[in-house]
Length: 200
Image (cartoon, rainbow, N blue to C red; front, side):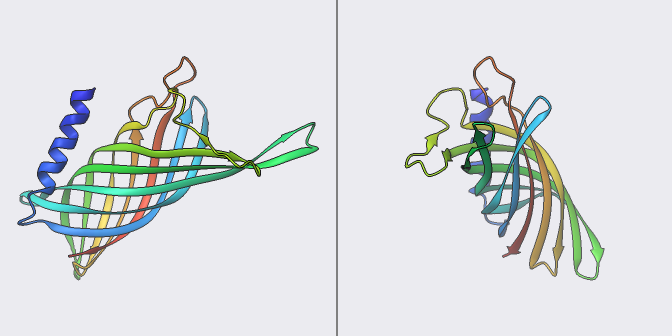
């Protein structure tokens, strides 16, 4: 698995370095991260920002390595004493993501083009914290070794370019790794995202 992760990162850096014919895309958007364990799911909502480089390979086939930062959060309530005591909990997570998406484009006419894309992404959890009520200190979710920082996702989606200036993209990724290291139910982190980018 370490060799697989290293290969993804090496390919990403190599392709990012090949900028001679690359089209740069800088964008931001909405992201929903869903931690799924058996039939239960915890959804965190937030935003992402980043850049990618679309490099032509052959004909309408291209590859777009990139790098993105995202922040997702969830607020919920916890109660005790049969509901007489309650507190608000906040779960915040920060990620750095390196996708390598292969895409195939086609023209729709009237200065509009579309493309489908698919490929792997390497996720690094920068921080994950949970704070209950007015307590001064948040719990670092990575302090115990039961919750992994790393994940490899596979997914794809569709995008549209307008006037070769603006891009709208929607995608979904499936988390391949079990984020949990103990004997409890496996946790997989899937994500839905919608973004708007400027093309340069």
